[in-house]
Length: 149
Image (cartoon, rainbow, N blue to C red; front, top):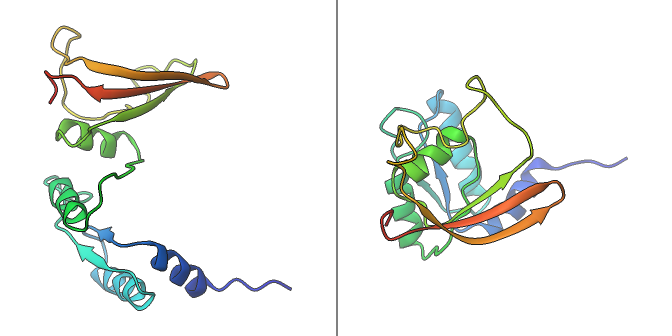
């Protein structure tokens, strides 16, 4: 029989992390318990304010904390709302996007859900740094051009 110890995994994970960021949570008691569990496991926890919309975290504050902790790179992986907030807020210094040979319509989820430019002419151009095939998909690596910075 194999027993799994969640607190053991939490301790190992916490030992490998320097900072964990938590935003506003629906149930403050749950948030407090979660923060206490991470701290007890040895993680440094910084609580940042919620985002302007009341969802997620204030990304400017989150990146400030990471910078103060000496973090030079952060992988931000998530849905269109998070990626849109990072790109729309000017926080993205590199975008790695995987493009699949599929088409979604207007009812599909946006890859970058933010109030960006409405036309191609108004969209700032990013520099294509690298392109590679990954199976049937294509991996694009982009950096902001001078007009985006």
